[in-house]
Length: 375
Image 1 (cartoon, rainbow, N blue to C red):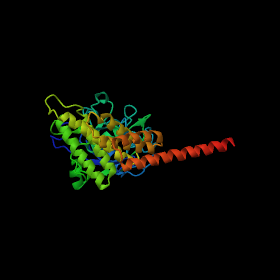
Image 2: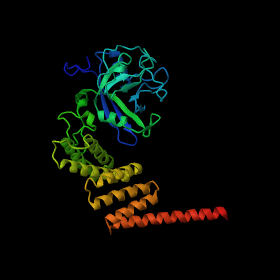
Image 3: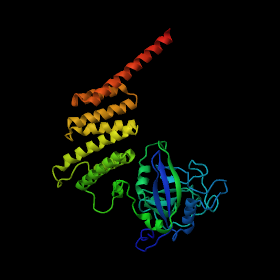
Image 4: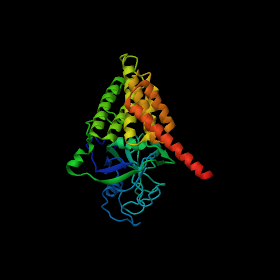
């Protein structure tokens, strides 16, 4: 296919970007290259909607993707008129014809036009994350993701209800690269930790992933997470711990020819990453997630040969999550388990006293309310 030969032929087209904000996180950049040599009209439509250079459209809306939302499950977006997946407008008018179907949906991270039937292209688009040959001949492929694939994966993995994500996904800025920015558009931008690894194992390149390599990467990511935590960047630290777990989950168990001790090392690291994730989630007031991660840590604690002190921390972290969720009775149970494992620990003792006071105050309040009701 022409798109597949693009690198070999040194064919390059316009490069554009989205800065995408997920929930309250810092915006992350996704860069695209457009196949203007194959579908110039379709590519220029997308490019101009990234720059906003065409001004106001026929429906009285700005012709720009800036401020629009994306839909996680279908990886689609571009409706800047109705904002619900039913609208949009091209730079040529409401709709324009299918330019050609020369390029196929034969690999992940292709950019293709969404439509409601033949010849109904507007501004809506979607990004593939797997080959989708059933779309060939129906949707026009006009570009590909060249950087920021992990952002697409994160959007893909967001929890949804009736296709609506629990977190807003918004294109807060967009535009076109030029000059040195154009040349650097394909370069992976390392964060403050210096993490060189792809965020998702599906996008890993280079040496083939094995259990020992995944363990090494996950160990490095634990270190990056610790560094981010110490610097005060809790969201980044949590991202690194969760990323480490994704690499570990690629190989739940080592292979027959791997070192015998690798299995125990992987279990121990999995326990630590879950427990550390719970710690940071509590600090970020993400109590439901903190509760789940502490539970996962406790589920693998025995097989990981976790020390009593470390198991006590996991119980304590789950208790804090229960408190955040107003589940004081469950919090007290976990704190009592933690105290058995770490008797005399001042932090645990103080937390028990705090929870008991909360329960006592709540009972007194309920009793007073009941008395007032029946008086």
